[in-house]
Length: 84
Image (cartoon, rainbow, N blue to C red; front, side, top):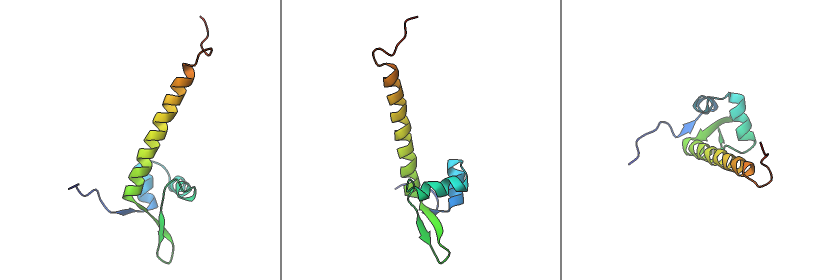
């Protein structure tokens, strides 16, 4: 059984600290629907499920890996190399 990794739901501040970004950047991720979140209570405070944050991080790694692979492939395209 997996060990307890903390609370199920995180605040914007929790997520900002985890990602080493600002609260504004986390709110932007929520607004763009890149990071799923729900609003709780009468004041509409945002909460992010830990599993959704982990999925977001995994997806960010996949996107970074793909971007790196695309960049490497572009450098290796025929005709793009200059003779020294």
